[in-house]
Length: 120
Image 1: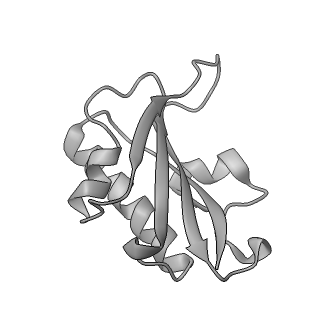
Image 2: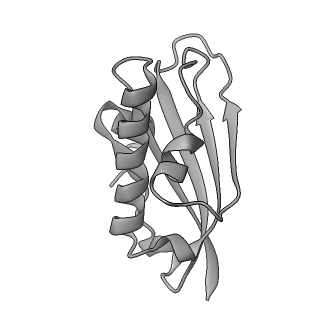
């Protein structure tokens, strides 16, 4: 079993805790489903949020999905002029037999523009 990293992002329509929970939950669910993973395959998840998001910790969505025994951490993205607003990104470390080239990185909605080269 290899350790793999899976990237993903979602742009929120507004900075509200319920909306963040909904969108981050959708992102995490898509990452797991598209890569044939379960919560037991997760090693850790890094969450970042753009500086304009203040309503909640993105990691709270993972806890809401029942991901309770996986180390999670939240950080703030750099405040770069012209960057896409209201974005939550993830970097999940997982155990998987999939080759690195077969890992599905998930960029939902408008966030797909962030990484056209790897977005699924």
